[in-house]
Length: 378
Image (tube, rainbow, N blue to C red; front, side, top):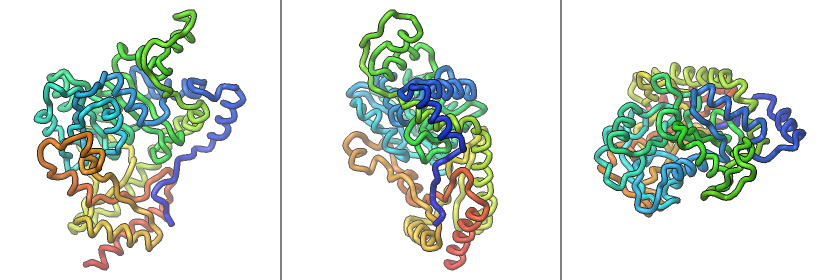
């Protein structure tokens, strides 16, 4: 069976984990954590980057830094992972879902403004498949209405929008380094702070509400509890695992792009015949090959295709059930406007195997199985 995902492994992970153990510093903010933070700041021209225990806790921190409180409203897409919504519902926000664009599966920027009320505190955008949302329009709307923008760039590490790294455009950016992502530390993430006035509070929130970082910098002679917070620091052993991959980030990126392009080229014939739809990459967007998906005619065809691929040794999967139709979505949110594309498009989408070092032989097996499926339905 060709798996859907294989967690990335660069080769030096175990060596670096042993170094972390040997340094007797396996808790948070050890040398490997600092290396990862510095790498993101330099590579992405980020004002400040902080590793977190997950992409979810990065979003939790963003919600706290946006000062989300009960009664506030947050606008977001329904076609995203539960973490995008949970982080804001956790602090009492009402979730206001708007429709997506069918071409990128991202939030439809033209639907946002109509959803803004005097209770709106933030717009949360998810860069689906590592392809950027229309950030110029979204930022202009946000600034005009005085609301924050949080980028859920969990899938967007190494992607850009008009030359800017995803996660560095809004007020806060959130990355994921889960085992399903392009770069992994097992469980982990990072928050990007794009305005230095939020740096100190971010450090305090991340350190259980204490000013411990100021103590380590010699700015105070002892540290104490100064605010709310939580333990958002990952183990330095996790950071060591990630560092091995960041050292070869370009190699991993190019390898994944080769697989993405291979799929895309080979499936053009089915697209031209009107059998399937392929991903759209808008002008100005550079993606990271986080995933490759196709769209079938409808839900039944998708179900049949996934079953056929599995019978032929290929594990392909669908993706999100729209959050506004989920039990928690009904409890904590509402859909603003009409659901023209969110449900319809999510019902058609199939994700193909995609991971670092996916072989050409396996890619061809996937492609040939898809072609055989549609040939039998001709």
